[in-house]
Length: 145
Image (tube, rainbow, N blue to C red; front, side, top):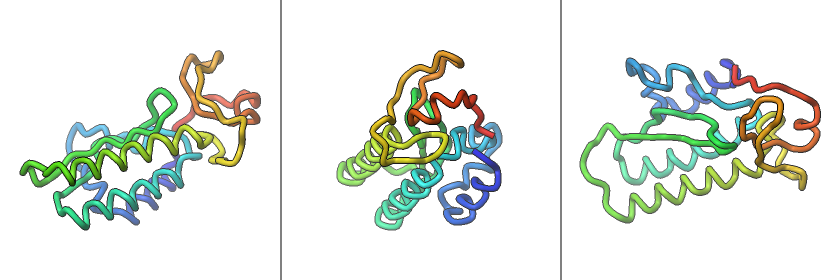
């Protein structure tokens, strides 16, 4: 993802990205996905922030990346007290929604209303990608930054 896009997201949700300053954190590499998932990340941040506002557990991201054609937003907490089942289930539900939305959004262009979007291995790069047919057939290469 382009640094300019990341910086806007970090500024919009500063409490969720405090992990960027932790030494050896994977977040030092930024959001390791393509620009097409910008809105997915923003929407996910809104859901995670709403969860944090309710449960106040110090949730923040330790990694945001594409893996096997899905958006993965890995988190931890500043508050190490055990979560109750209700809070944990609500958090897992957000995780599921983030993954589900990502497999219906082209990683390159962000289009969501296209029946040609699918997740499969690209022959040119060997990566599992979620792309619309125009982006897949364009020959664009994998580029996160």
